[in-house]
Length: 272
Length: 272
Image (cartoon, rainbow over all chains, first blue to last red):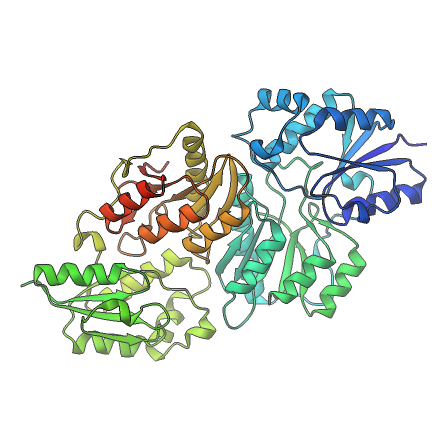
């Protein structure tokens, strides 16, 4: 039997998908959810505990007590300031060594993964547990981007790439060449809503979401699901482009159906 | 007597400041305001007309009929889609030649300036009319940035620079190393409000606003005024850093007083 998997759970549907996959394959699982991010109601009946993000010693103790050997990170967590994190001695030791200031999210998550491995855990990527999540190249539903949409995708890729290189965000919305918004601490859902309120007349915009260049692939890969598609439709977008081979599409069949339903394209593209 | 100055007016206080400066120096002036941006109430009693952005032929005719020889652009204009612009024959001719899609705001404004010069107008920068607007290096009020603020400024400069190089926006807000938001089509006021709703506990964030690398200096230089300072204070920011020698500070004494009043720093820095 495979070693017990510990899921470090943020928000969204991914943690439960992982729980279900483990159940299906008969693999033992334990969920450590982060307060304010993970929703215990959405973890099913999997054994779990909820800890403060800053309570590193307690989190490590719980993982060990529950016999976890392998870890996977799933679902976004709102990044707190050092002040609101209230780090315990173990977290404080970590931050004293790495310094919090200079790091973007990906830099921070990479450092946390390194730390977890020093503690003796193996940290794996979601893809190694849930196969088939990575977006393929090409359209996922029936709609395909037209010429204007392809131009907007190209502009969005260029912008998201530059933002990602600075470890700021993974997404941009472009309408008819106008960059309506780029993602930072607000996250993709907020970006989409914002783009809706900024939209111009005529052909709608496109959401582009890609991994950061050199991104730690075991942490926070760009993710979209049915909710992303529904939000995009509500904001008047015409489609979504994600990075083929790097973005996670949660529940592909349902996502493709939602896109068709909303007459919205969803396409895997290569990042520049 | 100096040639009559035509002010192509967007929103904000700059157009009226220019009108007042012309009055003071006895220079004849005419304001061509853009519908939806320029507020006729804020143009004083200067001779003016309001035109649709897409009505290029009418705008050019009005400028000529009013004897305008030199032009200055002042105040932001919300960029429309080609569909909502409803270009007349003259504007359509322009867009047919340059193509709208591929251009960022600065690219578009540069092309418009070139077009106006082909029409026989001289286009000048605001600074040549209103001296002393450019931000100097160093603090403008009594408060100075501390170490954390300087680190946030450095991060903001790096991010704003990359965004600017792609002709996306001029500003970013950073709090304790976390990029709360970056400016795109929403503009600086919306960015500040957004950053307020995303703010973390502890030391507040910093707004950084700089010119785009290679920016056409006769168009849309980064501008701050008393309202920017008040909005920043309301959003819990600790200070504002603008590019020395490139950002316009409208009514410097009032802005510095507002910053002191709000216990907020305002500093001119060199862009990387």
